[in-house]
Length: 60
Image 1 (cartoon, rainbow, N blue to C red):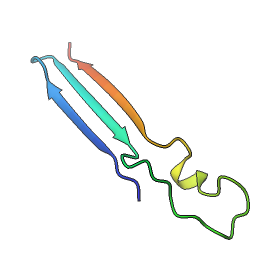
Image 2 (tube, rainbow, N blue to C red):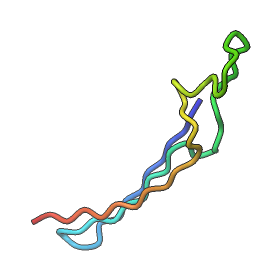
Image 3 (cartoon, rainbow, N blue to C red):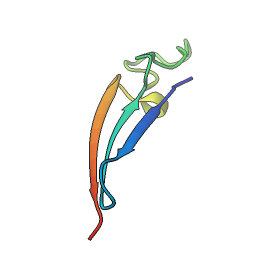
């Protein structure tokens, strides 16, 4: 199971700053012994690991 999280804060009436984290605990999916090539779980979980994104939203 993959956990994701996001947090945002309204700075002004028009500006919001946020942080998103994908694969929060940096875990890969379950292994499937029937597939013999690496990475056997790439199609479902990906191989990137944890990723952190910073967002700045500005309303005009």
